Length: 437
Image 1 (tube, rainbow, N blue to C red):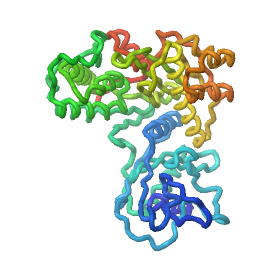
Image 2: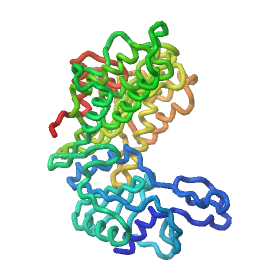
Image 3: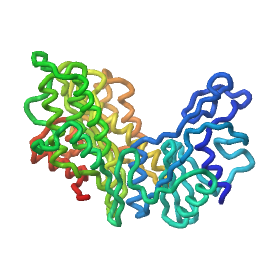
Image 4: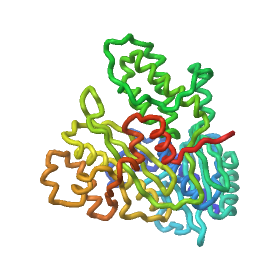
């Protein structure tokens, strides 16, 4: 058991091995194929995607196990390593009962012991782990502390700027302290609270005739808000809209940014709730705002992915080309959403979970018909080939596209601003809740 854990931990120290004879050099994040004299001395740190962390926490809430955290004390002291270090178990010495590295996310390690499972996720020098059997967590912690200079931080409470509250009912992810900090930093502590982060009217545009404002302050405010969207999908649309005018911000843009801060002032204690008592099935919703960008008339693609009642990821992106119809805009948005779904499917395979025919809900009937009926493809030859990726996924039974009424499409919150009533209903659908410290 100790050798298994030692082999796992060594992967963090220095993932470098000489190029095998006859092997063509290919650059990778982990540095498998580095060549001496070129990039042999470079070190690559394992970095997990935030969606991977959220999947980890969603799985922990579903399986009702506690997530713990450890920190490597000497992660950035690159001394000479005397012994050979392997990025995988050498041929002839494979231990099938050891840790298995994730096929997609190589910062994830999983080990099964009979009916129990221990899952470990790495982010540079931070480690989070949890198990269905507490004895496996205790054993893992003791061996890591004995072999390396590491400190056990106990239950996970703060990770990558996210505050995590674990309870018997589920897991809450929020950035309450960070909200307090930026509200105080930009002097909105005594400001009047707003009910929504963006006014439905008028629509924000370039406003070239208005007075310019301080670029440095404007960009600082936008940067602070962008970091907050990690746990606040309710401000995603408003922040993305305001971020478009950082090159030449006007007074109307600054007013819109201030409204976001006033909204946060009124709801400083809001976060994503991952309930224990919820199913664990993968599904997604997508939407588009046809011609939503006034300057170049490009559309917006929006999507969000859930595991049961747990919001895992969300997207808010401008499309690369101008769509010639609402159907084309919705079709592009659905294809983008399906790409994220496929990534999540592969990520969940490492947890031993298989999801096929994942439902993606779209509120455009024509888009659903195009995906399901190959005859319709003759009418979509003008659409970029890569967008038809969704049709291939449908034919392989990886996803299924379903029609949803616009009023029930949660992804609508990422496409436009709403009045207070509609906005609050959509926020509730995202499973965002208020809480007390």
